[in-house]
Structures are given as structure tokens and as C-alpha cells.
Length: 263
Image (tube, rainbow, N blue to C red):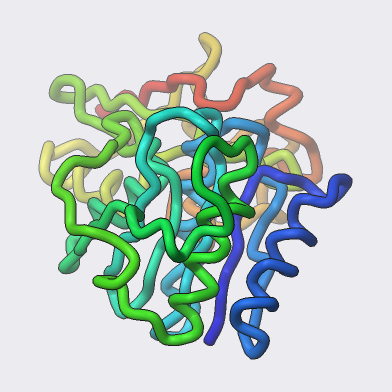
């Protein structure tokens, strides 16, 4: 069984290796895939974005271990969600919002069966002591019902998706910055163009840091040296610059608000 890992642990510490060791001790045959360990520290929406854009490309039955957890060691719950034939183990801090809101049948459970944990009591490394062991047991064939009780109370991030603030004005956020400096917004291209059509509008511009960007391109190479817009392969609206770092040059910030004006 496949276990896909998304964390903000980086590559310089022992954290990721320890999680793999815990998983292999419990489920030696588990196929562990490192999806991303470069989520910015504590940036929960970034973890949500990586999960949203990757999980559908994995085989049915995959267990996703998703850990960006500023509240580690507190009373917040640990969750197991099942949807689309996959399982998702994560803290209850909104990181599973794209799973909760993706429109399929979703069952959410609180991880409350301590016999599947490495330790009981307080821990400042719950990914190792609780979440990784549960993911390993699931990969080994343990059922979701065995590890937790169903719950209807869990955190959903209301700002993860864009909103139409008023006719002709949408609000979104910067959700990710890739290695090339492209600014990824939380505005799905499909939602954007449906909004354009529904409102009878023909054009739009994105306003960021008092700068309006209205040039739209299908790819990076066809653009000039100025900032432009495109919908990337992930499906969301980007602000990019051809062979330049748009995030730095536009002095942007993660989770910064932006507006889209329709005309």
C-alpha cells in the first residue's frame, strides 16, 4: 500500500526519516512517497494546496500523511478522513479543507484509539508518535472504523477558496510560490471563467500591491518581461514573469490578499 507524505519538516532534520522508520516497523511493505516536505513552516494553506493538487494522481487506497501542525501537543484533534477511495491522516487545523469541500462522499473520524499510538500522554512530535503509526496500520489493512470514531466537528478554512465580494469584484489569496517564483493564487481558472461568463463580463485584471496585471498568456515563453497571468497545469490562476522571480519582484507575501476586477 502507498503512503504519500506532505510536511513542513524540510530535509535538514531527522523528522522525515524517523516517520519512515516508524511506518516501516509497522508496515514493512509500505511504499512511501515523499510528495513534499518543503511546505513553508506552519503554513497550513500551503499544505492544503499541495494535497489538493496531488492526491488525485495516486492509486486508490493511498494513505496520505499530511503534517503542518503549529498546534502540536495541544488539545486539537487528530483526524482520519476518507474520500475518493483514499485516506488522509492529519491534525484538525483546516489542512484537509480541500478534501472536506471537494464534493465527494467524505467520512471524518477522530483518532481516539490509543492502542495504535506509540505513546500516550503529551507529545511534541505527534507525527511520529500518533499520526505515522495510524497511517502505517491503515496501509497494513486496519480499517478506518478501528482507529477512530466518526465526527462532524472539524476545522474548515473559510479563506482557502476565493469569493465574489460583489458584482465585478473577487477576492483571493496567494496560496503558493513555486521554485521559479511564480505566484500561485487560490483562484481556480474554471471558477474564474465561469464567474466571467455568469456576470456577462469579458475582461479581468488582477490587482496586487497597487499594481494591476491584465495581460493573459497561455504559457511562460510567449510573454514579455512584464508580469502576466495564466492558468497553470495545477488549474489555478498564476502571476508570473518570463524567466524572472515574480514573487520577489512584485514584493508579494504568502497568503496575501489580492483582488480581481471584472469588466
